[in-house]
Length: 105
Image (tube, rainbow, N blue to C red; front, top):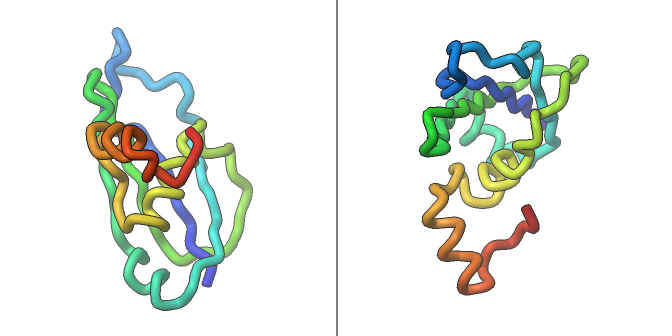
């Protein structure tokens, strides 16, 4: 089943409060097993970068459409699919120390 992951930056730490990289339509489409799609569909996942910026990844069933890319945050989708959540920085760092983090980002 095809899921659409959309990233937005609802909180940004820029000096003027404007996210100049936001052109809208920042999607990744993934074909996932139905059971996993049923769990993730309709969910929203917030990530706090700790510097005034925050990202939100929304998941929905959707047909493929034009995308403006995922702004370099593909790792968030990988973590959602693998762990069911976006890890906190401390969790990711600890897994890397133990050589248990499965991705190279």
